[in-house]
Image (cartoon, rainbow, N blue to C red; front, side):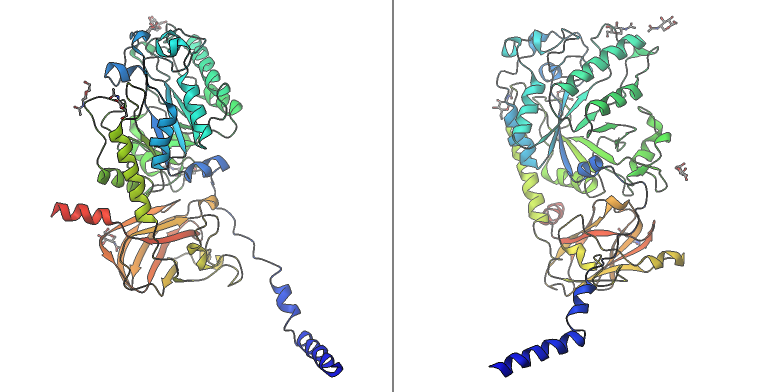
Length: 497
Ligand SMILES: *[C@@H]1O[C@H](CO)[C@@H](O)[C@H](O)[C@H]1NC(C)=O
Ligand SMILES: *[C@@H]1O[C@H](CO)[C@@H](O)[C@H](O)[C@H]1NC(C)=O
Ligand SMILES: *[C@@H]1O[C@H](CO)[C@@H](O)[C@H](O)[C@H]1NC(C)=O
Ligand SMILES: *[C@@H]1O[C@H](CO)[C@@H](O)[C@H](O)[C@H]1NC(C)=O
Ligand SMILES: *[C@@H]1O[C@H](CO)[C@@H](O)[C@H](O)[C@H]1NC(C)=O
Ligand SMILES: *[C@@H]1O[C@H](CO)[C@@H](O)[C@H](O)[C@H]1NC(C)=O
């Protein structure tokens, strides 16, 4: 008995002296710090917004009852009567069904009719027969959204074709600001506010005081994102088809942007690799031909919605999909069915990742194997962890050899979508990249950003997938790589034959 104890003690002593226990414990104690960010970087609110990927617009108001897209301001509140309005249905059957985590309501469109009982005008729901003039669409939607864990936002048209003071500089700006305050103080947290620059012909002597509005918005809602052509937080993508540029930088020079300036749409579409401001683009598009509900219109087919998804979310943007409630005050069946198909298609495509279980290696790893920036971080399903190469390579100046490779893939797994994601919290960096399957080039592109989706003409399979980053602003930092199969592109190709 005693001799076996002695032997054990001797053995432990030997191990300690030999450096097999203590030093290996202390080795893990000092992790490698992350690299410096490549400025500019997103604010916390912008980063949360970007990860939403799909959000929803509800165009609803007087136009819903007059079968028009632009009202005149002379409509009678007596015709606004969405007898079956159920905001919970908008959230459950449209927003949640499509996976949207934020909804934005047209609280007032160009016709000036207010969906909430504004104290500053009588052209509102208060004068309508709906809920005997005691209704408030803004409140009903804000409450229904909050109850279901969906965030809320508003659009307040600067152009007001009803308001008497419209066109008088100071007076109208005071009026507008008062309505803005109502919307931003009465309904709890507002996560996004949407401005456009549309202006009436009789407003030549008037300017919109955007700077005053924006500062007031930030004062009243600290974590809000302000959308306009020119930001400050989220910019317009430059078209209403929902397509971002195949080069799409979240960075841009705000000094070059003007709200309502048609001359800058290309700049808005692609952004600026040398831009000093982080103002990522949002792709607004309607599920139907029009923005408001019309009896004669129906939802776009699934294939078109998926195409929009690839060209918006798959090009570093957030997709703002408009779904117009009908004159009953409900989202029409055809639209809700299409939205479920859309979500289910996305889950089918991205629910299976053929990169899972593969081995990841890279040109280099910051801090080596235990440094915390291993190539395998791109397979962990966590957008916050990332692969970082060693920094020394930056100084070489010439085209760098940054690459990451997934190997030991199942050679029988066919994939036709390649998903690449940058760790954008550290800045957007990649300027040019190429993808190879077993050494053969299958895809290439410029920017990546939060998410880049490459659709392949023909499905690929192989043992290795290599992503070569040929140009970047500093070392590229990849958070995720995925390989997926989209059966819907195949189906539409077969139909086309
Ligand atoms: C502009 O037109 C609207 C009606 O569309 C009117 O209420 C407003 O007073 C007009 N403004 C000026 C400055 O004429
Ligand atoms: C704009 O101002 C000019 C000069 O003060 C005035 O003559 C004109 O009527 C104004 N236009 C409108 C639409 O109010
Ligand atoms: C944006 O600003 C940066 C820094 O001032 C500048 O280098 C770049 O050329 C600007 N972009 C354009 C398109 O002018
Ligand atoms: C449906 O009707 C509206 C209003 O009459 C019209 O503006 C629109 O062009 C029509 N849409 C289609 C697809 O015909
Ligand atoms: C609005 O949509 C609901 C749900 O599909 C439907 O029951 C209702 O009849 C629709 N209203 C109109 C005016 O089409
Ligand atoms: C990039 O991909 C396109 C097809 O998407 C192809 O035509 C082109 O040759 C590729 N460029 C390079 C340099 O491989």
